[in-house]
Length: 368
Image: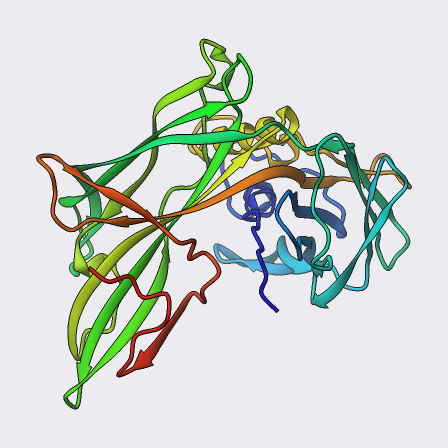
């Protein structure tokens, strides 16, 4: 069964762990966190399902302080929440059951998709009887990718040498920017998830093998931080990603003859409502606030999840309802002055993350 699954990185889990006691400092905040904190990563889109709701908990364990082995320290370990009842309900009285197919991963059937004008709420009952709800979420208006440009450039990157010292390295790559237009008069609210798909060949025993591999871009949370300037309905020159052209950044086993065939950008564009945008904006700020005297805490994220059975119980994460546009662009190998043309092709998001065929190329192979 083919799945169009788009998931949210466990931002809340990462940030929650960062506030749990782990080292000694002059100022150290130690929040009182229950052992069964719930973190929700969920998305319902206008694309056909299955859709994924992922439930994670924080399990507190006792470990030793490396500076003082005789002093126990409580440490939070992420763990999936099993055996929950997970339902999405709309304001027309329909209920959609999500079934647990692997620990903490709950999927809808393939018929579910968000519909314009409907409002959706998430209902969770854990195995210990706690009831969690989300605030109602509506499908936001569409956003459109007007133009996409790949500029030939170089970036400085901090690298670690084999001797353990850091140095700046000049990396050749493509800075990809876009103009993105909303459906109203105000600036659109959106986030982008780029992926790097490499098609390459290797020669083995006089036969040519055809390989492909998806590489996640290093960017963290890509949203339009300028969203509330409300100057126009178009965000111009928004940075999508930096695509390195260095072969050593491709993480390919090069024991055999290696020949890059096509570099491809897989782009997912999400339109966001204000609650989702506020969540990602806050998470973006927290991720980039490390090192300040009073760092913000994970529980300050504007989650739309709350515990209905015990209002004082902490719940984190996001149930997101978004429109999703998926597009695929091939990098044309011959640059035009300082630009590399991007040619749109059939959507390749559905292919496996990696694979190969022998002698004959796969059906989705993009010829030169």
